[in-house]
Amino acid sequence: MRDLPEPLPHVQGLHAYTPGLQPTESGWVKLNTNECPYPPSPRVAEAIRRELGEDGASLRLYPDPTSSALRAAIAAHHGLKPENVCVGNGSDDLLNLLVRTYCDPDAKGGYTVPGYSLYPVLLAMQRSATESIEFGRDMRLPVDRIAESDARLFLLTSPNAPTGVGFPNVELEGILKAASGLVVADEAYAPFADQDAVPLLARHRNLAVLRTFSKSHALAGLRVGYLLADPEVIALVDRFRDSYNVNRLSQAAALAALGDEAYYADVVARVRVTRDAAYRRLVDGRGWFTYPSQTNFLFTEPRNAAGKTGPDIARAALEYLQAKRVLVRHFASHVLTAPFLRITVGTPAEMAVLDQALDSWQKE
Image (cartoon, rainbow, N blue to C red; front, side, top):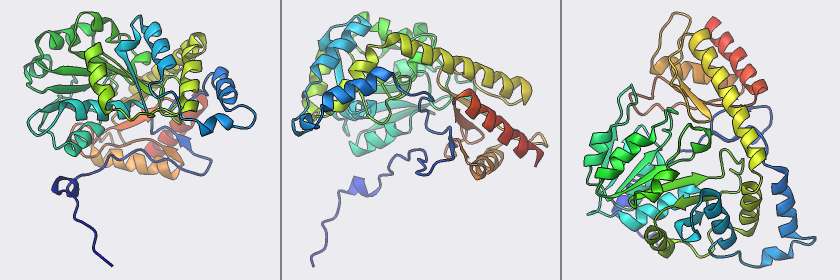
């Protein structure tokens, strides 16, 4: 039997993105992957049933290759034109397309740290030159350093992940006025925030905005995201996009979800109320440093019964919670994030289970 060919040298050193644990058995309180705690609009299931029909015969046909109806609906939702929209298999698909469009060994890709840990993975896959700009513990947006970057593509989670800190549009606009490359505001959590960057698109051609149906619209299992940008950017990204990148059922579901604004406004409001109450319990009740969040999660620094904090304390809390079948997330690889845990905002009942488990951990 012949040996396999050697992979490309840069592939041998790649480290894949590590997703949060997805347990297959029931009984877990799952607060580790920022999924919506509530089901999607009832219109979603109805739309999927209609698309399937009685015998599922529609599945033998390819989907609309450009997701044209969904593009038009997204454009109308944001007061834009269809040529300002590209739809992807989740926003990660579109991140990949943007990196492939704009980055290579001679064209730098930039990002902030901490930020979405997929960014350096995608840039490494493209063998791109990279620039990372560090936040301080205060999580103030380093406007001047980003504005001075010569990155052809700069990726910015806004609000930030994993801290949940939001950035005002006036600061984003300061970056856009000076930046030499395309700035991508990765707004996965924008529906939970006080501001979003979509209004800036009219004034800045070098801005692109990413959104997802996974968080506020409860469609993480169907993988739909979209990009809002200048038509020239969209046309370039479309050259790299797979012809049938979003399946029929996902397109139908996303269209139905987008059409039920009242349902999702209620979902977002409920998550924000639960989030803000949980924040006060962590800060006032436990005395834990916690970043004010404009997302559907909280980033908090556990403190044990002796008043100690740090990476080992965060790891101990994580392991104790997991033993109690409560899942949260720990980002141990960076000095700023290692003392913290990221906790998805669940239902009030799920947050009560979390509180009881944290009480037990501190006592023990």
